[in-house]
Image (cartoon, rainbow, N blue to C red; front, side, top):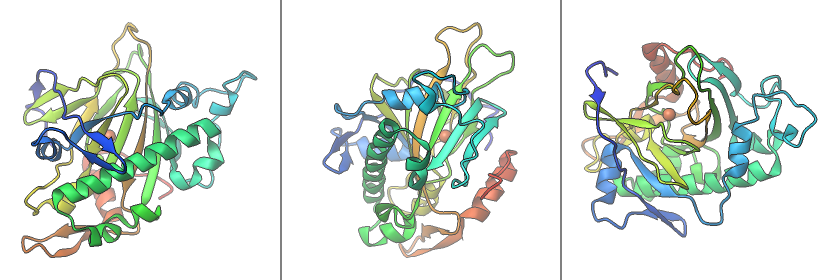
Length: 297
Ligand SMILES: [Fe+2]
């Protein structure tokens, strides 16, 4: 991934999708075309969904319990998360991050957070299925290529991020693509940017909207289909110092293949074939980009 020539471009308005029943669609006729080309779109947060428990978790998970009302969100830095292959990490860029698979949410999170994440999981699955359909992936292949996202046997986890502001080092999230099919993100502040051609463009996210990213597994799968999905290159630049808006909180739900699975790809003849083991693919990617691969996977 080379972006040394990339320059800062003007803000970008991503296409805005709508969620109806269990499908995601666009009112604009070219909505899907744009979303698949960019590898990103916006999705309104359903009116009856409260994002506050997620933000409360982001603002507390890395702190030690102190006997106060936020204790059930705290203490994750020192907790073992033995059931999870992911867990807590002090990261070199943004400082603190917690990742827990959906099958373990009930072990580690308070009830309000579990309820929110489960709704997000359903919504992420709807968005994933709609993206597969829009790219021309036949429904009969969905379970094979996702490892059974519909049966919750694929790989789904949440990432909880705390981006510190006002530190002397640069902190943010360096440019990357997500490795899986799809990531749905909620953040309490702007800061998300995507690489559009040769330009880094800040995305203006309206209040109460999720950002939806498409990742490598979707790009590999659909590369030779007439409506290919792109994996969006994105980043969160360092928070400015001195502190303007305070720290930035975000939480996501990710869906991808399991590490013991193959990545799949349709050939130019439209036939589905195996591409590469997802674990091998992920290890190679981490070496190329110079980050450490998850130690427990
Ligand atoms: Fe990402």
